[in-house]
Amino acid sequence: MDANYKCSIDIRFNGGDIQFDVSDGMQSFSFKSGIGFVAIPHFFWTLSSLYKGDISEAQLDCHGNSDYYLFSRDGTNLLIKHIGHYPEGIFNYQFKLKDYMKAIDTGFQKYLQQLEKEGVFPLKTQEFGHPLGEDVLNAFNVFSSL
Image (cartoon, rainbow, N blue to C red):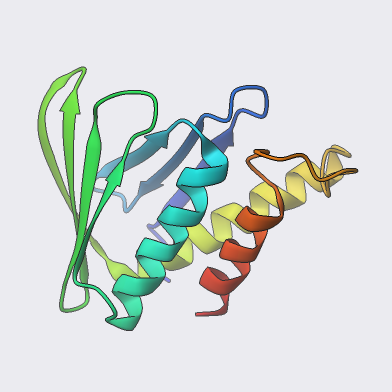
C-alpha cells in the first residue's frame, strides 16, 4: 500500500451513523451514511465486486440524507463521484483501487483493535441492527480476504 494512503473510521453505535475517511496525501474522501448495519456491508461488497471485476459501477445511497455516491473502476483506478446536497455539488475523486482497499482494510482492523482495547468489542450480545453486528463483520472478512 502506498504510504500516503490513510484511513480513519467513526461509527456511532447509538445512531448507526458511519464515516470512512480515506486520504492519499492529495485528496480526502469521506463516505458517510446512516444505518451502518446496511451501509457498511454494501460498501465492502461494492469495493470487492469492483476489484474482482464483477461490476464496473455501483451507486451507494447515503442513508439519512439525499446524497449518493457513484463508485466505478477504470483500470486500476477507483473513481468516486459524490453527488451532494449540503453542500450542493458534484465532487470527483480518483484513487488507486488496491491502495484504497488496503487503506480501508487497515483502518477497519485498527478501529476494531481500538474497540477491543476499550472493552467494547467483540460485542457481548448480537443486537439486530448494530453497526458491528455479525453481518457487518462477515462482509468485512470477505472484503479483507481479497
